[in-house]
Image: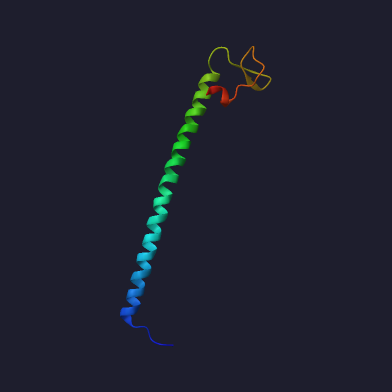
Length: 83
């Protein structure tokens, strides 16, 4: 096996390091928006849960037979009704 020239070996190491840095930068570029969207969805879910809890504590809303229903209505209160 031929002995590697130190300059050639250093060039190869530099090229691999540059390639790995570009890959890491690309992954980070893709990863950042995903984390941002996940954080947004988490906040929206928490807001929705709070709004539902607030609605359920308003007068006229009570639990009937273990299900959340509005008295006088036969349909179940769902998230779709909040839109």
